[in-house]
Every structure is written in C-alpha cells, then in structure tokens.
Image 1 (tube, helix red, strand yellow):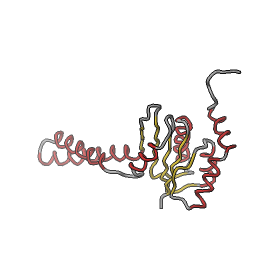
Image 2 (tube, helix red, strand yellow; image 1 turned 90 degrees about the vertical axis):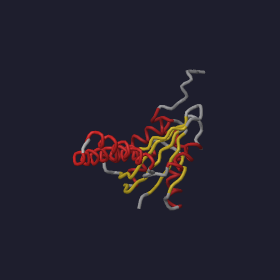
Image 3 (cartoon, one colour; image 1 turned 30 degrees about the horizontal axis):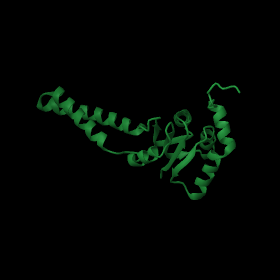
Image 4 (cartoon, one colour; image 1 turned 45 degrees about the vertical axis):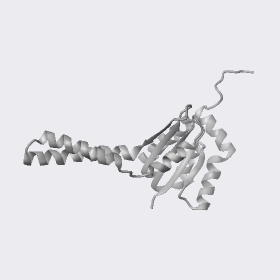
Amino acid sequence: MSTLIAITYDDEKSGLAAFDALGDMQKQQILELEDAAFATKDENGKVKVTDTLEKQYTGMSTTWGFFWGFLIGLIFGGPLFWGLFSALFSRILAKRRDVGIDNDFMEEVADSLEPGGSAIFILAVKATKDKVVAELQKYGGHVASTSLSEEDEAALKGVLEHPEIKAGAEDHLDLEDASGDDS
C-alpha cells in the first residue's frame, strides 16, 4: 500500500531542494516512489503544479499509440497517417486520465500556500524511514496531509516543524534575509 505525504514550505527554494532530494533518494534506493509532484504559488497567487508521473504516462501512451497506429496503417494502408492519428488520440486520452496523486488534492494544497510558497507531494511505495526523514529534515517544512497513522504523522511533524530544524534548514539553504541591511 502506498503512503501519501504532502509537505509545504514557506519558500520555493526549500521545496525544490526537498523535491530534488526525493529523486536522489530514489536513485540510492532509499525510497521507491509511485508518484511525486512539486507545486509553487508565485507572488501574484498563480499556482503551478509539476506532476512527474503524468508526463511519463502521457509520453508512454503517445509512443504506444503511434506504434499501434503505424502497424494498423501497414496492414490497411497509410501507416504514417494512422500512426500520427493514433499518437494524437492516445495523447489526448492520456492527458485526461488522472494517475498517481489526485490532481484536485494537489490543487487544493497549492491554493492554500502563501505567495512565494511551495509544496511537495510524495506517493511512496517503500521507504527506509529513518534515512528519508533524516534527508527531508534538512529542509524543514510543514506537514499538510498524510495517509500515515496519527502517531507516525505526529512524529514526522515533530521532526520537520521543530524550531531548531527550521533554523538548521535556513542555514543549510542560505535562506537568511538578503536585504543587505547591516545595522
């Protein structure tokens, strides 16, 4: 069974660093993701969600659509036409299909962000908890929602939202006030 975790950040830099860390953890086989997404809310309040799985699914569907259309075209004539037609049709169908993390849920969390904030969404199949938490702890954040047990969610909140952790994350990412005021 997969575990869903949504973590929000006060700034885009922290969220992006944490999102990049997910990919690194997956390469190290510390974390096995079913899906992951990154959301930001710019200073004007515009929300942008980048969903990793849906792009992969759409590309794969387009490729298979072209292949089958081309094959049918070889049999019935007009392979290029049928290949392109099938690829386009497959792409449209794939765009309409919601796979992985629910898009409405991601939009809801992203809408709740403060301008300049970000969020990561993790749908994990397997994880080495202590190593994943230790890595995510570097970036701080606020647990927005999880499918974890209440006990595990409270522990994760305690680790990510602890004041010393937040200060350490700010130091780690050089998020100090860059106003240039040396008073």
